Amino acid sequence: MTVDHGRLDELIARLKEQGFRLTPQRKAVLKVLANSVHHPSVEQIYRQVKKDFPMTSLATVYKTVTLLKELGEVLELGFADGSNRYDGRKPNPHPHLICVQCHRILDPDVVGWKDLPQALSDSTGFRIFSHRLDFYGICPQCQKRRKPKRRGAGRS
Image (cartoon, rainbow, N blue to C red; front, side, top):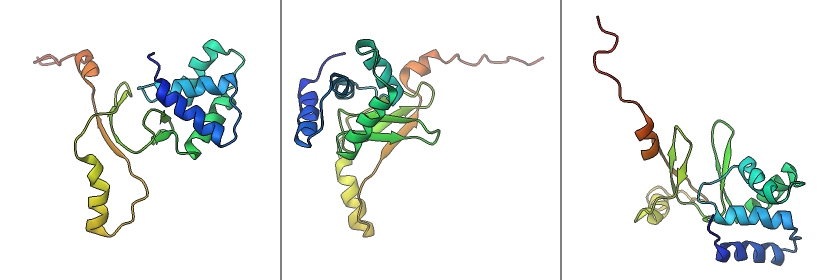
């Protein structure tokens, strides 16, 4: 994992300015969120933190992620199946590519998408507070793993 010290430092500074304690376990959660490009679930964060801090509880991770979400420092991606994933690198709304097979989530570089909320607001009169722009499909790795169907299979 490459360490994004800039984002980690931002998260630490934000918690300090809000008067929250920075335990080693909480810092470990911040580090995972600041450096993960894979949009981890709380359970995935927990497994990573436990490697260095075996006594860490799942509740500690949940509380830290919830706190960061409330402070606007993490973006929560909720899904219909009840699974939530978190983006601590880019806490503001942005487009996502989501693989329906392996559940990988990517942040594509898309030109012009930032103008979309304002354009929609201007054309409809809606006051937009937040948005999500998710594209679902099958990632290149899963496409390679799919076996092509044989022609004529099952025919007599």
